[in-house]
Image 1 (spheres, rainbow, N blue to C red):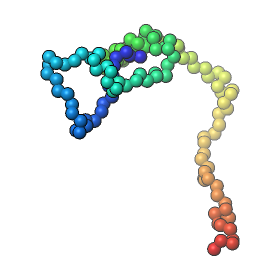
Image 2 (cartoon, rainbow, N blue to C red):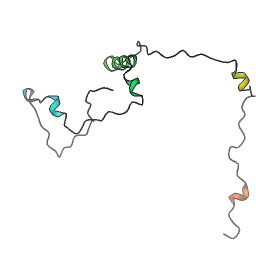
Image 3 (cartoon, helix red, strand yellow):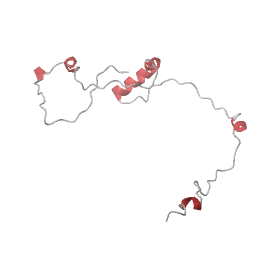
Image 4 (spheres, one colour):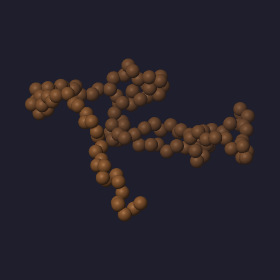
Length: 117
């Protein structure tokens, strides 16, 4: 995960005063780090070891810097297609024909009890 601070976009509140700084008065970023607008780092869904994997980090950083990571290669295992046992396990069936009705309702169930008018 990136250690860079990110801030949540927030609508301007016209009822509150906002500080206006001149160019030589702009405070350093660490002074603003205490502002409660920092977005917490969200979990990536990967294990910690995977997050530090160098191929993945190179691809992610290139995507952030250049906007694309098409030329970078993340190695994955080769996929082998095995069809020999597939036909034995899954028999070829005729073309699927959907039923005329998916929900079957009996007419007498729709009618209420006879004592209710």
